[in-house]
Every structure is written in C-alpha cells, then in structure tokens.
Amino acid sequence: MYCISGIKRSWRNRLNRRFHTTYFLQKLVTDVTEFKCTNNEKLYLSPIMDLYNGDILGFSMSKRPTLDFVIDSLKQALPIIQEHAQYRTTIHSDQGWHYQLHLWMITLKRNKIFQSMSRKATCADNATMENFFGLLKQEIYYGEELISYEALKKKIEKYIDYYNNDRIKQKLAGMNPVKYRTHASQLAA
Image (cartoon, rainbow, N blue to C red; front, side, top):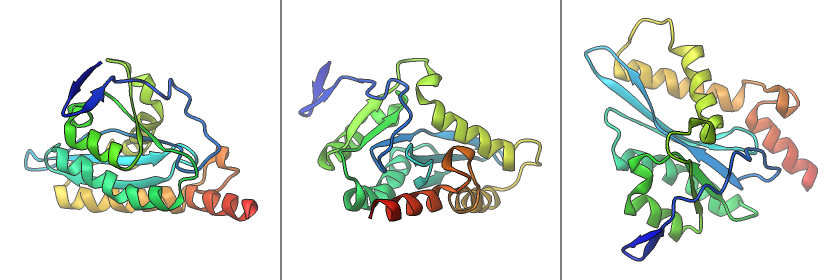
C-alpha cells in the first residue's frame, strides 16, 4: 500500500468473486471494452453495472480510452447511487490505468464509494462485466460487417436500452433488470 495526494492505494479486491447481492446499488462493476469500426477507428465502451439486477446504470463511449470517458459513466451513476443506495456502494474494476488515477479514486472517495480491484491478469474477478461484454458483442457485433463509429454508437445505445428494459433473465424470475428492480421495491414498500 502506498499513498499519493493523501489517498491510500491498496488495490484491495473487496468482491472476491462474490457477485451476488440482495441490495440495489451495493455492488457495482465496471470495465472498458474496445470495438473496431470502419476507417480504422475504434469505439471504447465503459459501462457501470449493478450486480443486484444487471442494470447498466451509466455508460459512455469514446474514440479513445481517456480518463474523462470513464469518469463520464461514473457521473451518470452517481445521482442514482446518492439517491437510492441503502448501504455503502462498492465499485469493482480491473487494474486498468483509468482506475488507478487520482481523479477516479478521489471521485469515489468524495462519494463514499469503496473501490475494489481485480488481481493482476485475473479476468474471472470481473466475470459479470466480461459476460455482459460477451453478450453485447455476440448479439450485435460479432459476424457483422464493420460500421462507422457513429452507427455503432447508436447500435450500442439501443442495445443497452433493450438490455435494461426488455431483455429478460431467468435469474431475475423472467423479468428484465428494470422491471425486477421496480417489482422488488414495490414488494419492500
């Protein structure tokens, strides 16, 4: 463990592959994936997923994997976390350079979010996000002709809306992520 600018960096894996939770917004995961587009361009996607129901709470896309684009997806999720989290949130990622930088860590600290990181070269530590990337690419990308950055961006936006609001999951009693969360909150009320 070492310290830069008053932030302790320990790279602790708080999830330890415990991907299940019965509490909305208690455990989140994030990562970055890359897509090839026409004209030698690339699209980078950074989603944040709630392990409670698989809901994508925020996501951003960019032609370059910058820190700002990763922070953008976090900023989308923060109002939801601040308003609805019953317990302190933990966000899990791999050890990508984005997640080791001061701005990422200080944003989490200011919002009282625990940081969790995978061990080096252990993609199974972030299996749920890797699974989402696999589904996304299998359902709208693999086997398809390369398309422009803008066209792929629209296709991914449409897919994430479908994934959250229409795509049912057996483990969610045959409901989509949003319906499951809404149904569970009505039962709790």
